Image 1: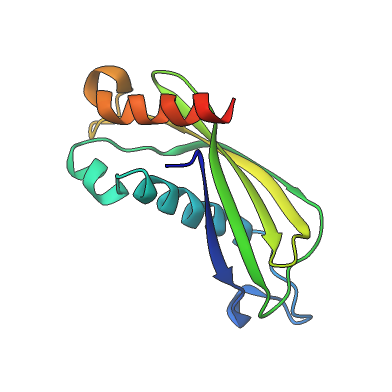
Image 2: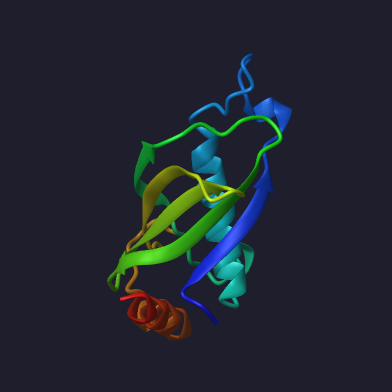
Amino acid sequence: MTDTYTTDIRVRYSETDQMGIVYHANYLAWFEVGRTEWLRESGYTYRALEGEGLIMPVTEVGCKYHQSAHYDDLIRVTTWIESYNRVRMRFGYEVRREDGTLLVTGFTEHVFLNESGHVVRLHKTHPELYEEIASKARDRA
């Protein structure tokens, strides 16, 4: 299994403005698609983790816009673990057009919480997931 995962998305008309350019906030939704598919490729789903009482809310987000995406572009969202510790994790993202043009770089940071909203130490509550994250972060380093 690789340390990055790439998801292809076709830009829909509803994601653009009147000029056919992607509205800036849609990149954050695409980050979520990339993150969800990265987890799935790693053998986990948000649904299953939430079923086990683990939630991962976003605590910080950043985005740098390099070029615009347009209606009907095929874009590729690449996702990886940028950093992690026992209570939080940061995903990194690149969004590129299918021709390789860099459109956006960014990150989301998440904290691990239980259903009551209390911080949990992932290595204690979900050691397999913690090891998977650690392994992928080491592979990328």
